[in-house]
Image (cartoon, rainbow, N blue to C red; front, side, top):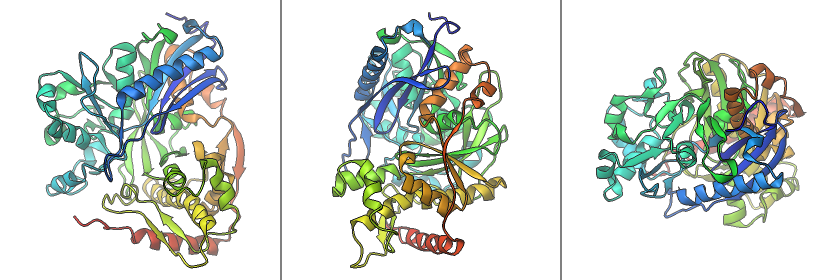
Length: 500
């Protein structure tokens, strides 16, 4: 086993919605090697989104080997590795063979929508919110597990016999890496099966969703040594940190104190505010979730605003409409016009998440005229991310009573300076991009480093965080509120598009 005190580097598996990456950081949090590979997005029918779990595991092995080879690193060069992952995505696999019983049901998948009306009849859409912090929605894992158990031939029988294992992607990867069936409390808090207070699976929730306890992983903290990797390229390296991707970004942005918040612009958009060791229940459409738990310490909680579609809308513009050939081209196209020309694009492709939670909403482009062109649409696509973030910020300030003076940002879209300026404009406050932009992977590495003594404490990590650029608002307040009013009008046009 490597000696963390002598190792120079720390690694992180970042398993996201569209790709898998392995990043290696030095002690100062700088990236020294990285590899990334995409995996197939499977759409069997409208509203269904799947991944092949075996492809994800294969890509994970490939990127680890590739990144280690870039610097000719040996396992002894790594103090530990952390795992961060797309959350809610649901997998069940055979305990003996490791073979999945079905493709993974991705967090965006809406096939369980019919269950929501069934469950809402007894207690409404918030019937589980007091215990789990989550409303009934297609987003979370519990209904996806139920669907697999009820739909895949033989799955329920195997599950009740103890032959199947359930996990989010972190659990699936850890099982392959170490043979252990574990998850951390941040990922468990996204299943709708864990009690936020006890940080354990809840028998009443398991009964309500019809899920046998035997399939569930053990819940552990986000930062401890779980076991050692058995993969050749990293054999013997401790796996010592697990965080859902948005919680990992919160840690990577060193938001360790109550009131600190970050917004990640990825496939979707996720704004989290640390509320400390207190559970704060939302009255304005946000989620209550576990932020992180360091070994031997109480869990920290967070309020979260989850937006389903932001970066995925740019991909849709590229792949489905062909208006751009690369995602990075959207900024150039959008910059060809000075405003959106009255066009607003509400990307409710998988319904609306925070703060509305309307699974039967669908996407709308509003305000089109003969004057509208592809540049206006491109600009409306970028502005949609900023408008949705404004809605979440408004809700978060009402729930927390804490004004956000500045917004820390990360994720792939923060390279888009037009978007970042518009975000500052529509929020009416500063927007900050950190020097190290890979905060999700960095957060997983930080968790693993704290568990193994590679980092002494959170103050070490705070000292590393620095600003790359800040955008200040330039838009007049009257114009800001006028545009936001049109956005709100467009959002209402998406409501109840699908009839129950």
